[in-house]
Picture 1: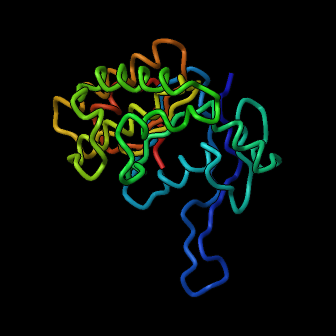
Picture 2: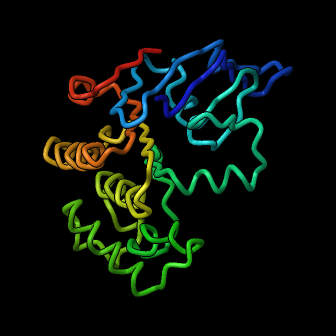
Length: 215
């Protein structure tokens, strides 16, 4: 069974202008349900763009993206927002909220789900311990190293217990020890039957994937 099916997808930015860029052209692929899939390829091959399309963060210029048989292009913005609650995202740029304490950054996606404040705090605290940075709980993103911010992003992605985790270069800012810890978290999630999709140049991630797709 496929978690995602991508059918002849192209994505163009600034279409019709002198700055027109086609990030993807006529891409078709299938990602199995419950797989640990790594999207690899050279810089500029469209990995980040594809992750955004799979995660319903953007819409293709041409073609179709199906999530568990549902065409994302046929969904309303509200429908896409509901689907995204079933996913977790680790962004290459971290996307943390400035001046907001770390635990609130992690737990922020739980607010629309009606999770009480005390429960959100405990979820964040537990995830920080698993990520090896429990001492950052009251800090803000401005006080963190790049590697710490990356691990905060991972903790936030796990907070909602996602069916699907999408990660864009999650180990690119980490030292070897931190990268191993993050990799263990990804494999733990995968071992529970969840689908994990990672865009990465990291050969360690590629070597441990169940599916490798090269763009």
